[in-house]
Length: 69
Image (cartoon, rainbow, N blue to C red; front, side, top):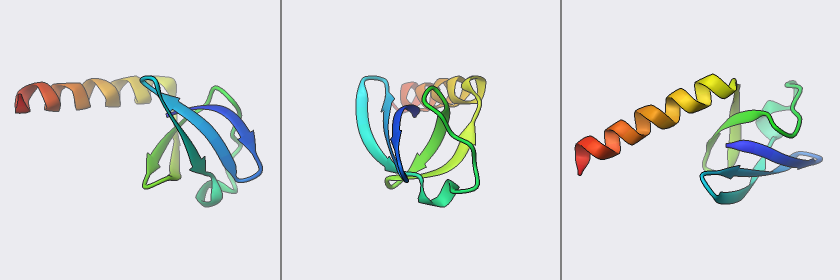
């Protein structure tokens, strides 16, 4: 997901039109800013990723969904 805003240990993120509040508690030592991409699991940011990594991940997920259809 891409960070839109940060308020303490909570951020507002968006991915493909879906918005969520995400906890940044597990990434306290990481420098994060609006525009950064993060990997989210059950409402928690677990890893900062580059824009290229985020795009590649979406491409792979799209391929899996297409193969399943």
